[in-house]
Image 1 (cartoon, helix red, strand yellow):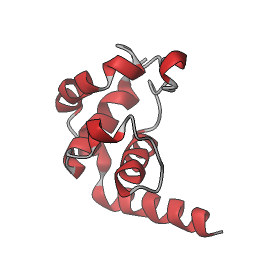
Image 2 (cartoon, one colour):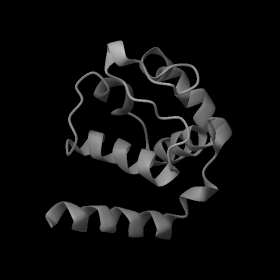
Image 3 (cartoon, helix red, strand yellow):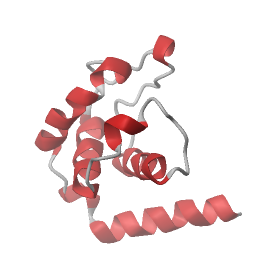
Image 4 (tube, helix red, strand yellow):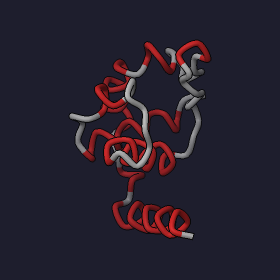
Length: 101
């Protein structure tokens, strides 16, 4: 029940922030850090245990990045790449990834 409450809170926060105003072009340049594991087209890489992320909903990508940074989700390989990014960077990345085919 606690996790469901967290998810609902994140979704409502995202609605208030209007993540759809994010800059996908800026997200594309930020995505250069992600290519090594998630692939040029977001297809993922099983050998890196990196999932396919192309086409995921922007709110899901955003909330996942926030959860990794807060330590609510654990991924010691990914954390160094995202820990110094801003909330706006997360929104831009989410906008770009959600548009990938």
